[in-house]
Image: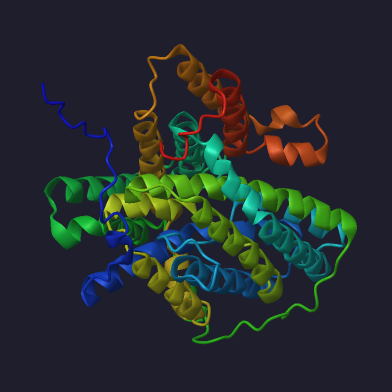
Length: 453
């Protein structure tokens, strides 16, 4: 009898990295890059806007803060995708910001007088926190052995699912309870965006199908302008050119409590970024290696330092663009690097940036609903590699996802805990990651073949 060769259930293609290093033709290259730019720009700017409002930053300085956030995100994206020496994972990842830093940034800012003075304390804390994250990057690489598919699938699924409530607010047009929330105009804009994307996926081919999200945003923006949801009047008022210089607000200030708070937040963000690396690895057909995780986290640390220097929130891996990689099936890191270049250019062109900023929230929310849903689906796909008929794996997934939904649904449940612990527990992604790793070790132990899986 001749033994038949066995085929791996999920073989890694020999050219798994070929698509990552591909450079599409110029026309497609430009469109794909613009699609990444709009996905980033229309959503990431929410972070500095919230922080600026929370610390009562003057409007003129808020504009600079926004431009600095785009500039830092662009430079950090280039470093992460192209790589500099041993820095950068060299995968199609966009760096923008994490909601985890909002709370600490506002608390630090207000504790230091608010306004520009408070912002300088935030920048000082970001610089130190970035240096700590860079020094701790080898520890994140060591996490690979405790991230088999039963863990990575749970975490990736929670990355997408925990972000979906944010898209609901955007689709509604703001905060629930406001007069315009869920209005017919807002829902019409959101529906237009989703229907456009669906029609292109159903009937479109080639390039058109690859830029479905971009076309959906344009269609939603057009309808938004027609029904009065989108306001492009600010485009005329914006200046044509301005340049963000390092330390525009002044030299950063440093104090121990601010540094400790931001360091905890940034280390937590490092766990989220590691989960994002696994998510993009599933899409690319090859998970990250220990070396790639170290280089990626090192780049996140450098980005946080850069943010403190140019005057922005710490740029970190933005999950919306990961969903876009899967939706468009364009995996080239050079496309994303070009988006980073466009982000740098955009930071100097307020009038052009004003067009992207004017995209109606319902259209952005509808597009993100699609992208975050795709990320959740990638997590479910990853869980398919684990044996869920095994009761041990089943309980790991069930409890870790359930635990992650606790802070996702009601973050106030942990208000009685110390402030530092609240920052950890209020992230559903981090809670799922910690619970999944712990339960997997308890039920399955540290298996030697985990990295291969």
